[in-house]
Length: 227
Image (cartoon, rainbow, N blue to C red):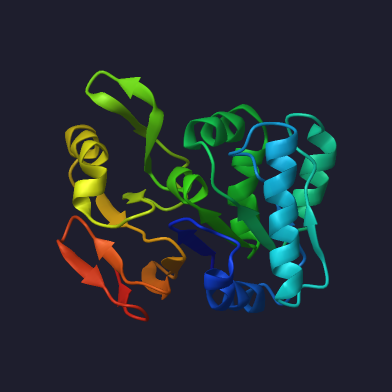
């Protein structure tokens, strides 16, 4: 069964160690491949990738690497991604990330990797675009902040990262409410926390409870919820 981890941000830091060590164990130790496509080409991509490599090597991954940027080396990037048993998508711009995933073979490849049992982790922008719907905070739509279809690897779900309560994301929540159809659930993901999506269940992981925004209640750490 496919395993995804949607994290709320401040990824690849000491507060994420236990959560990420569990992902590494589920991936049988790796290889771990980081592709920071939510960052700009060049320095931003390399900095996030290097952070990911250091983080997972410190957790015991003998094989943790940064994939070439698919915007610069398509074949090299795809070859690196196909090696992964744990694929990591750090945060940045969700609009940039979604554009790259849709305009290159990386988007379809993510579903193939999941079908092959690869563990996929996305944080902040990485978590947002994996869901059915995503906010694009740096773009405007007809009703304010743009809300568009994501990759849909997690159906009927939208996530709000860096969650510290609804008042901090009021514009996002209003845009989601006005755009997405009924039946789509909204989760608030705190930093260094998130949900493990496995076997159609979502289990809260990390350091803080996730918030079921649609249901108006917390999902305490270790508890599971089935949409």
